[in-house]
Length: 142
Ligand SMILES: Cc1cc2nc3c(=O)[nH]c(=O)nc-3n(C[C@H](O)[C@H](O)[C@H](O)COP(=O)(O)O)c2cc1C
Image 1 (cartoon, helix red, strand yellow):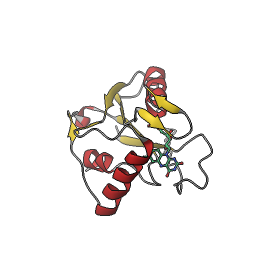
Image 2: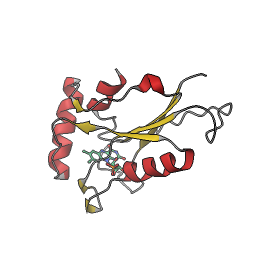
Image 3: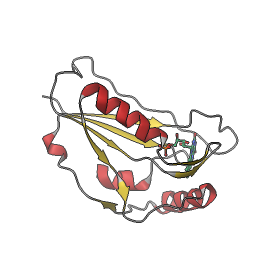
Image 4: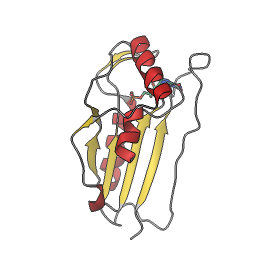
């Protein structure tokens, strides 16, 4: 079976114009795959708790909510990406760290590991940070 990675960049559903530049979301689909029955599925996601733009302090992020919905709908396992070094809870401080890491092309370490070779379909979910995927998501992709 063809292994697929379905990448969902969750940019803000809220109005963020003037705050940061946005990237286009990428959703790859393959109509040949029956999500209910075909192969073993995994949802890999990162979601930030703490202070987020316009919504205050949250305990469960948007990507986490969507990741749970997808995993429940298709019967997938879940792997939450947990950066080894936690990111600031404060939104502006988090922006600064994200910008620095983007600029330097950092590959921050993550906790845990997952055997992706065991899966046929992998959903990858992450929020849009400064018009970019989090650098530690590249760590797991690579
Ligand atoms: C550090 C940081 C940078 C962000 N940069 C952008 C951005 O450039 N464009 C955008 O549309 N949203 C941006 N956002 C908003 C998040 O993408 C959005 O709130 C997302 O739904 C958060 O997902 P989460 O709750 O799963 O972490 C940023 C949020 C954070 C914390």
